[in-house]
Structures are given as C-alpha cells and as structure tokens.
Length: 133
Ligand code: ZN
Image (cartoon, rainbow, N blue to C red; front, side, top):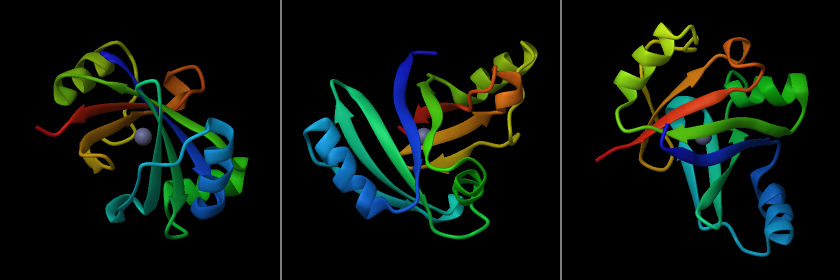
C-alpha cells in the first residue's frame, strides 16, 4: 500500500451531495465522471492531497444502489494506492483477504481497481487502486 488515495462515500443524489460537501469542505468538486460498467456517477473533491469520491448509483443493480438501500448514505470504502494491482491482489489473497472479484475493473479517475470484501477486512470495504499509466 502506497497511501490512502481516496475515501468513497455513497450518496443518493450527486447534485445535492455536491452542494453539501462544497459547504462542508469549503471548495467545489473538481470533476464529475460516470463509470458505466460499475453503474455509478462520481464526483471528486480534494483536501490536502486526499480525494473524496462521492458515488451515486445510475442503475438499480449497481453496488452503490444496494448499499444505499441497505445501509443508507455514508462512508462506503477506503481506497489505497498500489504500484502493481495484480501483484497486490495476489499478496492480499495469500494473507487471507478476499477479493470481491478475481478480475481487475476500470474505475473512475483513470484507475484499475479491485475491492477486498469487508468480511475479511474487519468490516471496511477496501479498494486497491492503481493509476493507469
Ligand atoms: Zn473508490
């Protein structure tokens, strides 16, 4: 793990959440990006080099839609940057962590991503992300 790259927060309505977080953080979001394959629309804020990613579901079968339905809005995942995501997944698996999918997906913000199941990480959904170079 290189650093905490961003914190993901599930929201019901991205426009409303953007207004709320702009007020809270004292700055505007700097981009909005849709990731169709994941069924999400995201917006990003930056606070001293740490990104806050707001995630809104774009379809009912999206993981974010299910999360919001079950748990309500709020903290969704912590994303750690890694150098080599394939290698990290193998290392984490060998240590007993459980990837949600065996394959790497394309996430927002020019990243390859993979999630570790919260049942293996003490209840926190952990994202591994690698910048696409
Ligand atoms: Zn994320």
